[in-house]
Length: 228
Image 1 (cartoon, rainbow, N blue to C red):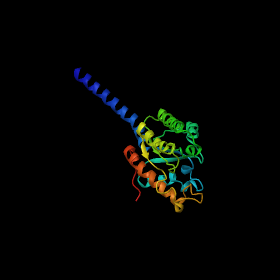
Image 2: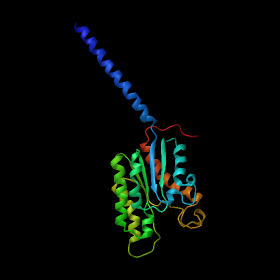
Image 3: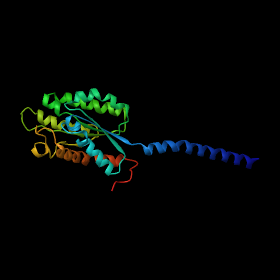
Image 4: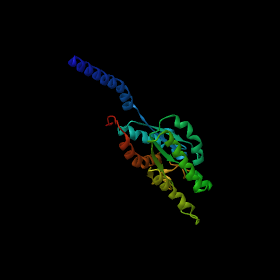
């Protein structure tokens, strides 16, 4: 009787383990097949003002992601003329999806309007907080901007410092200047001398990728075969 009891108990334990394995397998397969989402929230630089969306840096970064064999989809949430307040107002609908990485590229239009830096900082922090409330493990990348060195009231300096302070506060990756290598170069901008042309966008994509790639490599649990 004792042997029969032990045998029966072993069978029950084995059955329970098999059921648990079968039940967890579909979930594991779903997780490994999931494509991560990168939300790029920005203004005309992200939107691709004067160009097609395929020429804007988010689409170019998507090409780099595929070439690197990483499972991420870039969502271009750029709107020309947008401000930090506008980004805060329109972030809510994007929270209906899971966000793995947030690339935040807002603020320059606020500066052109003379919006207090404290208000910009509050809006940007509000965006980060709302995204993190729904996606606690989201990685944030902050794309900073700079203003020409004019004025003696410290606004320019405080504006530039704001992005680094936000990055430090939120343990975010920082791209100090999104337009590095492009701003002020007529060959890389549209005739308005403000917005990058297609060649300029390729430089922006390199700038973003330089900061974003290490973030994705660190996060990505299931890379796909690298494109040759």
